Each structure stands twice: as C-alpha cells, then as structure tokens.
Image (cartoon, rainbow, N blue to C red; front, side, top):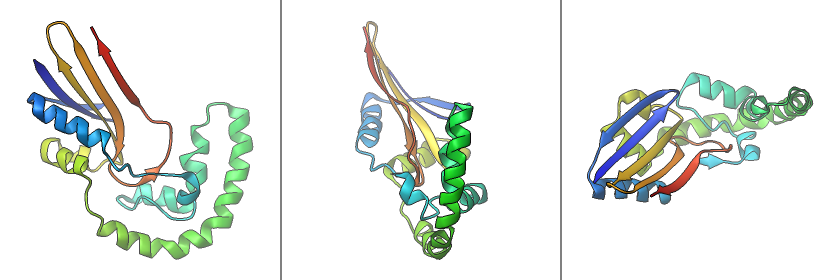
Length: 170
C-alpha cells in the first residue's frame, strides 16, 4: 500500500510517503480539527491575523472589503458590495483599534494546533508560517485509491469557501 501526505500553499507542493497508521493519524487530525475559521462579523470587529504585517494590516484597516468583497467575481456586485463594506469597515474601525492590543497578546500566547505541529515537524518552514494550507492524504492499493483533503487554517482567518474532498476511486 502506498500512503502519502501532501501539503500545498500558493503553488508550492510538499509530498512525502508515510505509513498507513501515520496517514490515518493525519486524517484524524483533519477530521477533528478545531478550525480557526471565524465568521465575517467577528473579523470586522477584531483583527484576527497578527502573524505577519501584511495579514495584520489587511485585518486591521479594511477587513470586510479585503477579505470578502474582493473575492466577488461579478464586477457590478463587487462595486455595490465595496461601498457597503467600506462604510462598515469605517464604522467598526474604533472597535478594532480598542481590540488590537489584546488580540496581539492573545495570539502571541496561543498554542499551536495539532495539525500545525505536524506541519512544523515534517514540512519546510515556509509552509508552517502560512495562514492556510491545503492538506491531502492518499492511500493507494493495486485496485483502489482513497483521497481525503481540506484547507486548514494555521492561524485564525476569516471564513470563506474552502476545499473539502472525500472520494474513493475503484
């Protein structure tokens, strides 16, 4: 049986063979992950990501506009949504200003999740410093392939549509 775990961020892919028990352990970590996905309204009141300046600036200055509205494909809908999002971000800015320092402190002392510990132990360093990674497990025998994968936030990030795939090919 061939068992692999793959981790991807922004086109960079890392893949390694593991034992079947180790792959099952990673699947359990993914299935039982207490995800750090946070709803948009919480993200508009508290700067969520403080692990890098770029993430912090996005979540502090224009969280709704940058994290949600800019992902709308239709240009007309994006223009309408950006006006409301900008007003909402301006109204909620004083709240983010008040919650900024406590959030910086709480994130500094936050314990790593089990999946992040696994990624730090087995993957290159740039993968462990990402906000979100895509983790895929594959178990292959001569007549069957079993896939399991999902995007995993390594820090608290705004909720969005995310990849989740479970399939068995025979």
